[in-house]
Amino acid sequence: MYSRDGLLPARFAMSEPMPHLEDLSRPRLAAGCRWAGEGESRTLVFPEGVLRLQPTAQAILERCDGERTFEQILAELAAAVDDLITKGSL
Image (cartoon, rainbow, N blue to C red; front, side):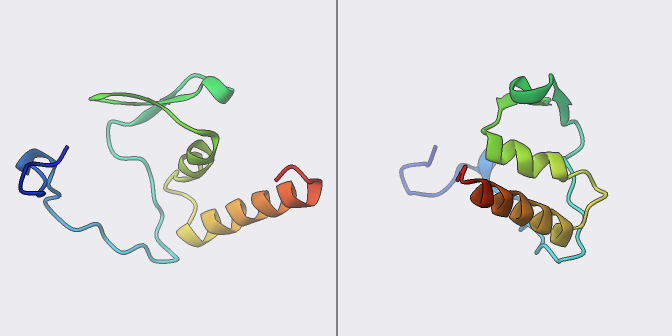
C-alpha cells in the first residue's frame, strides 16, 4: 500500500537495489523459504506466511535452486513453452 504522497512506507522500501541478473547467475530461494506439499497443491512457505503459486510462477521458482544458471532456467522454460505450442496446448 502506498502512502498519500505516493511513496512506499519505510518498511516496504528496498534497502538495496536488486542486483542485475547475469546469464551465469544462479538464483535460489531466500533463506527461510522452503517448499511444502506436492504437485498442484505445492506451496512456498516463508517466515511471514505461505504462498500458493500459479503454475507459471511455480515452474519458474522450482528451477531457482542455486544449481541452474539464469541462462539454463530461461532455456528450460523456453523449451517447455515450445513443447506446449507443438502439442497445441498453448
